[in-house]
Amino acid sequence: MSGSAAPVLAARGAALAFGDRVLWSGLDLDLAPGEFLAVLGPNGAGKSTLLKAVLGQQPLSAGDLLVDGRPPGRGSRSVGYVPQQKSMDAATPLRARDLVGLGLDGHRWGMGRRSAADRRRIDEALHAVGAADYADAPIGLLSGGEQQRVRIAQALATDPRVLLCDEPLLSLDLRHQRAVSEMIDRRRREHGTGVVFVTHEINPVLDLVDRVLYIANGQHRLGTPAEVMTSETLSALYGTPVDVVTVHGRIVVVGTPDHAGGPCEHHEQPVDDVRRPVGSVAGAGR
Image (cartoon, rainbow, N blue to C red):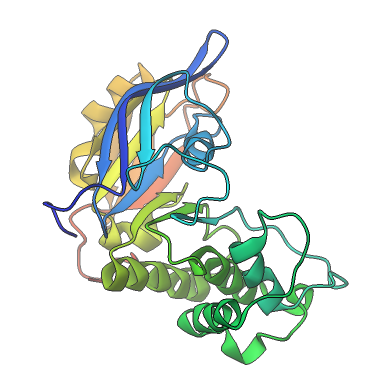
């Protein structure tokens, strides 16, 4: 991560609201090339909506947002997007390489013949995520982990400056969580791609994360995991006492309100100890 290079994503006073309901406001953020930003918070806090704003699908209510120095726009080749995983029907008439190709031309009307350069990009993206062996397999017959590799290849097909990941580890077992996390980490280190990683479970990526953006109750906090994942910070965000304690080398967050805003006294959110003790089950080290 380069601290002197121009940010690949920049927000100034950014806010998003629906009527009287403010999801977040006053967001100032510079995402450096190669930086890994984890976005945390309860359901309905506005995490995925932030990604929609970067994709140009949701206008801001206030403030400014630039992606690679330009306003967000649909179909931007500067942005790769890994959506929340959804199982595909076995009868889906798409091969893995066809799905990756949609990352190049899916925003255009019609399905014209792809150029040799586009076909080469598709092959390179599949190879980069270890999916070349099943490039011609029907996407619906692949396992969840294999499908997620193909989705990441689709997101990388345009060689993006920013990679948006919306719960990319959801429903994956520990082995595939580690593999997907390592692919994303390798991409940002080798190509300087900024990563915005929305997740409910930070355990598999804690060792990879540079900063955390925690959104809750219409507010947000931005900083390192050690700065954000504290009793003081989360209590201030939620406006109610929240305890962050270490239990057997893991952080347990107790007392966070549920997504509807009411207190949930017994809710626990296990997160790896920010001190990353020996034996932690966090993602691969740097």
